[in-house]
Length: 479
Image (cartoon, rainbow, N blue to C red):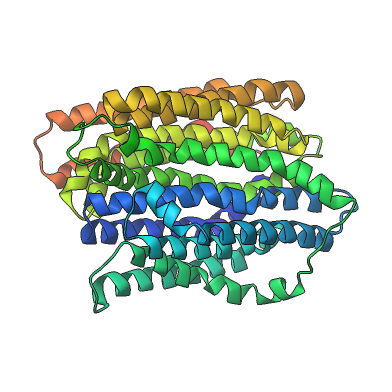
């Protein structure tokens, strides 16, 4: 069990640096939805959706590339760092300049008049975020999760403080652009933290390494773009594809959708923390004889943890909804369980995807993700006019389910892993059934909120106890 314990321990530390800050950032949803109505929050949602997409282009898949080439036999980690950092800085600088020269066109295309300053903040923010992405990856490579966590926690403290000051205490009317200004100022602290790494960096083009790096990273970048479009297309296209008068205000509907989407992000936070620890772990273990069995066990426990999150969040939305500052946002709560399940499938897909990363067949990741993107586009195009943002939620669920299945099916041909697919499916199915049975019982109960919440707590406690009983033998088995 030593390797699994080590991975779990690092996941917790990366969680402090990833989940905790992002959870605190999630708590800012309460502030933002209190200060801004759904229409203004819709603008915020739209802009951050585009940030997520363009960040993939800026980084060009170099984090994964850095791990892969640094772990190759005889690799010179310092040279790999220099090469990958050079690519990121060059691409980020080129695109930042292009965007700054086309501000008026960007504002017009996005239909956000009066938000030019917000776009400027976003461009600078993306540049800073990406030039520190390889230094952050280096901390993970060198197994320094404490420093990783410390930098992230300091950043989120600054971010929360700046949001509170600018939106509540600054002697000026709150504006959406202040959210992006707070992010820019907070993330600027990373430049200070990574002064030694940035100073030691030497722009480099290596005739042997650089072409291989670009060849390896290009499919990852395309996969990342398709993946981010899978996640954000609904927020980008919602107000464009909604029929006239489907909602009173399409921007407000986008705000409601974006705010409720944040609850599903709770699942994604756990996935992200796991990925930070697991990605370098998988690369390091891929050459071991028993790595397929180890990867299968890791995925099984991952599914169980995600099922607990799915259950815990879904049946406690009656409490969590109060994080949304205005009751106007509550009309979108019904999409949360669907999106949580979609993210669970996405997390399993990430685990399955280890096969094409360790075998250097990254083009398969591009193919699978593009299939998912086609499903996302078609699903949103067909379902948004009929179901609104509920249709977008079902499109996300279908997309990630198909990607997961395809990745498993193809991966078993090139890097067979004995995943416990049937057991994992049963866990997911039983969890979904429990969620909707609890909803049914809640609908018949006329008790106080305290009693209902106590009932939910008992359900979760019993669920976890049964899981421990079922899995106790496996948990004591050494890896």
